[in-house]
Length: 579
Ligand code: VG1
Ligand code: CO
Image (cartoon, rainbow, N blue to C red; front, side):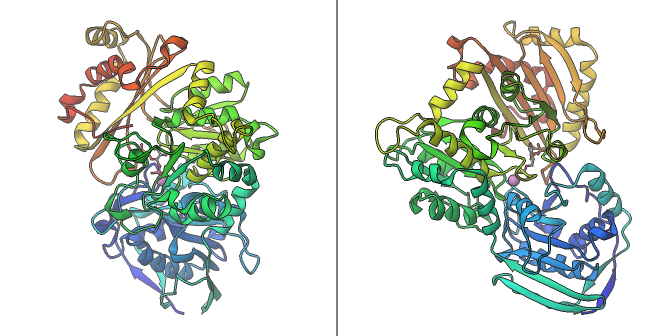
């Protein structure tokens, strides 16, 4: 093949957000738009990470992925990359990409040193919806801010990109195709998207114990992939390996537009699962399953449900951490430490204290956990946004989280299988609250708000923080039954491993009784701004841990809305989504 240099001009707004560059498909399909970002990424990497390297290119299979894979492959060849690995049909979940970088050996003995992941995660897909791209490094984790800043800088000055006149290759059949280029051979290897990941899961969990649970007559199970890429793993793992019934999988065929839905595993968007689990508005179905779970488009998120019971992601990571050593072979020697993102509830903190574990609080987004894990400081971590994971890879992992919960259930029920009464998900959570106290928690999202107004609201809150007496005046006038604000700040993080500092990571109000309010602007949207409001209250009194969370948090919510003048700035009387 031949290499050509294509003249181009910078596009505005190619700054990677919390997790890569996410824009409407309409934006991505503009001539040179994707190419500019990809070349900017190659130019941000050191030469040996590009020339002669092996790179993975795949994603959640959303609309435009197949075209993007061909474009990136041609550019990779032109930039001197030695081989490209592609999951069959262009599919690889985000956690599977991380696993492939870390674990896979190519047919010729090669190892990958990075990946382009093509996903906009939980955002809808299709010609009128979102596409996304992000780069992951040789540890399997998202590029750190040093690299993403450089990519962005490059996009603002780019003048040309390189591409090769390769023919399109067939991504539906596994095997290697070789091409001769000006600098030697270039290979494209298409491989099965699940086998490396399945192998890794088998090395972490006791599949035999989980199989006994899933095939036990008194246990019932339901998994909803929301038509995302998780479906490609669910049948292999839950059905083939673990003996679950085929009928326990719903929406498990990956689709380019996620069946027209919002592939976001929460109580609002995972409607079918929510109804099956007895949590819907009207219960038309029969007896709900004992356990249900859902994933987002790229399968790094998870929602865990019991029968008629929702497990908050903040509780989920705390409960996994509390039970990991007993229930999951990978952790049997103990946990190295645990970590959560700043807005995630402090349920994990209480477990860390109790188990005397190292504990870290990092900014939102998975990239901050990777450094801790590479340094051997963290085994289990999570975010309130339905992200849970461990140091087996460097991304959050939706199927891993489900296997972790199934392991805990299998462990707690090892004497109850085959018949009789099972310890339920709800009981496990309630026992956890009884022991550690309960963190009532909710998140309000105001989506697609005017970006200018959202910034004004944040600026107003920062200014307000300088006077705590004024803050407390407002708090008292809103609700006299809410405790006092004792500290307000903008969260700033100093990475304990490399010393890098990340500023402006969200506005916090800390109350005397341990309650917290956090305000942040989302970094993953593709239109307007999304304001996230996180509300948390700790309750140690066992007689008060059984309330409905929206009731328990009502007073704090009132305070938050008044403090931020939410309605005044956004014109919204209610959030778009509550989780
Ligand atoms: C959101 C979540 C964050 C998560 C990120 C990527 O970011 O809040 O916790 O890490 O999405 O998840 P933001 O900036 O919109 O709040 V995923 O599954 O979209 O890769
Ligand atoms: Co995701």
